[in-house]
Length: 156
Image (cartoon, rainbow, N blue to C red; front, side, top):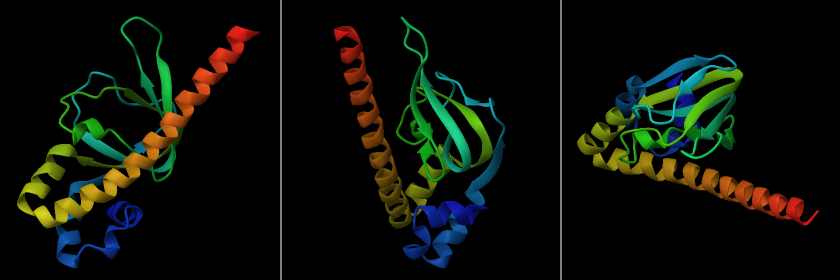
């Protein structure tokens, strides 16, 4: 199951067998039934997730309004980055919208791996940063489209 994580991030091409041996036990597969809450906004940020199959909706609840869907993540997408970027809580919530499988790794385990094996940690974080950058670009495009749609609706 951890092979999917390693392959998706193209880690099998850059990590030695020894480095992969260290990483494999840290990754676990979890099922995700439709409508199942993966984590709530404000909950302790423990895991980083990778979608293998299915779909997960990322929702943000502002203090003064209704919950907003900010992203839909699908096969190959990563979410729950608060667990590795220093935030103690998730800044958004995640709910499975279509049943599937997720892989997860504890943010603390990944941080420890980076400290104990800095070369390996840098390679993993560089790949994760690339995946996250692509997702942020997609999210930015969605926000621009929503704003444009809102402006068009006001003109009508």
